[in-house]
Length: 168
Image (tube, rainbow, N blue to C red; front, side, top):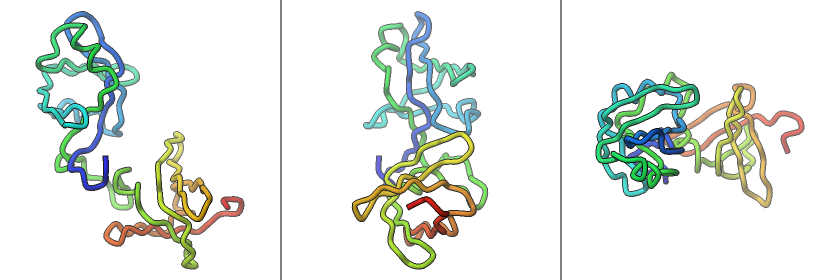
């Protein structure tokens, strides 16, 4: 999925649950309550629309009953598929917070103007995310914390960072 896609991934179908077509989903969102508002999600890379009939929160995710997925076999065929919502339905983030799709692909420069590379992926660590920056024949793992990330300019696609000792 590219930064130009109008959809955000919010869950991955992990397994079938029961015999009536429910699916167990691993969350890819910090806002699981969205499933109680969402009447529709979009499945897979072709963003096939599916109505959400029922939602049940569970310890590590959510159980969903999706329209047209009525048997365990139907649910098993959905395993591994990503579920999306339109970007227009994204939960507004507080200032200084960004969705991953906004960060991946941005160019990273030091406060001194040295180009470090491009954010290729983001690793969640629990306490903070880590930006994987690749370029100039190297890979740098940058903690996404205030002391390192000095500025994020979405319009220009540039992140400015202050490198901590030991990051290079």
